Length: 261
Image (cartoon, rainbow, N blue to C red):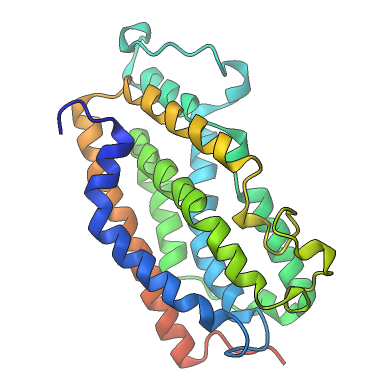
């Protein structure tokens, strides 16, 4: 792939699987909304499974970089500047760290708002042992031991948020503010109210441009072997995302995503 930057390499590698998963998920958005359903229960179940990815990667990310604020803006892009591979990869993960990307607090706020709509939503997916929780376990136990792989997760998951977030949120809002427990004023797409705050990034275009620049800069600290492993892991991300979606289909068919009374 010559001198193509890492984001472009990832895009090329995942082109086919990304298209497949995107089509699967886009086709299922109407199933979460009226007239197919009377409550956000199915949406809550689906979001809870995919939330596991963000919760896992953000926990590992913070564990690996420590206090990124101490060195933000002062990171060398020269591999020789670091005494060990651990320090070099840690620096790469610090370079791509942008607080605006983080979703954990937003997810917690969204789930809290959804549970206020119907307390029984808290029990929708309490059993664990699903494809989402298994993915999170894999990130926290396996990916954490090969920290350079986290670059694949960070790029893919937040880029998906940029590319699809505005569209998905607009589709969800078609259900009407009352469906989400929102007032008419809160339903404005320029606002960021729970339970839909996950889907928005403030000043998204600016943050997205900075994010890409950061990943390109971090790529300079990676070895060729690490880059190849990141590309391989990118395919694993989508394999597991497909499993999450297909399992949700099975759970819905069995009635796991029931309509709260």
